[in-house]
Image (cartoon, rainbow, N blue to C red; front, side, top):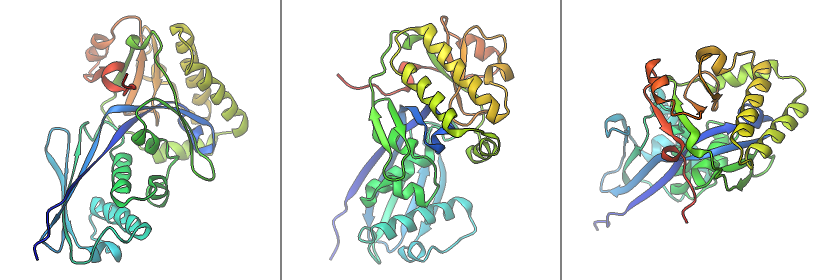
Amino acid sequence: MTQAKLKKTFYSNGKLFLIGEYTVIDGSEAFALPTIYGQYLYVENTENDFIEWKSYDADKSLWFETKLTTDNIRKEVKTGNKVTDILINILHIADKLNPSILQENNGYSISTLLTFSRNWGLGSSSTLINNIAQWFEIDAYKLLAESFGGSGYDIACAQYNTPIIFQKTEDKPKVRSIEFNPDFLDKLYFVYLNKKQNTRSSVAAYRENAKDIPLLNEQVNTIIEQASITNNFETFCTLLNKHSDLMSKPLQMKTIKEELFPDFNGTLKSLGAWGGDFILAASEENPTQYFRSKGYETVIPYSDMILKKQE
């Protein structure tokens, strides 16, 4: 008997880490922003007995494809291809958490589509994890913990459509949706630094050098609570600078302004792992020409990057 084709669509938001990078892994709060950009997962059953997987970048170019079987996933068969083996690992864990989704000898045509360039660091992995968790009807935080690991703030961003205050706990993370709509949003811009940053190595450096974690967490929490409610642009910039100066010590790194843009007329803040991906530029004047003159072509206004609650 021919089975009816059933196509399911899942979607997750990308993320940007405004304040609380690094310390979030030790229990501080995190101020994070879900992005307009994200990733789709399309799942369709087929008459084949294998899983055909294709992944597309934002420009619709195919960047990855593979063929798997349910048996490959259940036995976690290694292929030697790094991306394929990561995917098998995620699906293997998802299948263990809910074995009823993948049926023996059933075929699937699966595709993913990013709406942002996968080089941007907006969460190609976290959006995939959250989409697979939706498909398997399992807890995305648990799937993350057993695969990539991490604080889970990016999973929260994948699921929430407003800015959030996130805190990792021993059980399920605390996530608080907040209103963040100060008058100065039109003075905030996101600038891509033309390279991805390795989060794991950055975290290792922080782990090695951080001292007095409870005090550091307390200081970060205070900055976040103040930054998330202020309507004053100068106060907001002062808080961003305070956080950057605070974290430069345990990271043993210069701030992004000291490192690359000492002549910038405004405030700059690294978002997430320092040294790559996106930075926040807070400026009275539109800084697009400044950054483009230095070779940084991707400058995105806040309103074109961050989700806001629909009225």
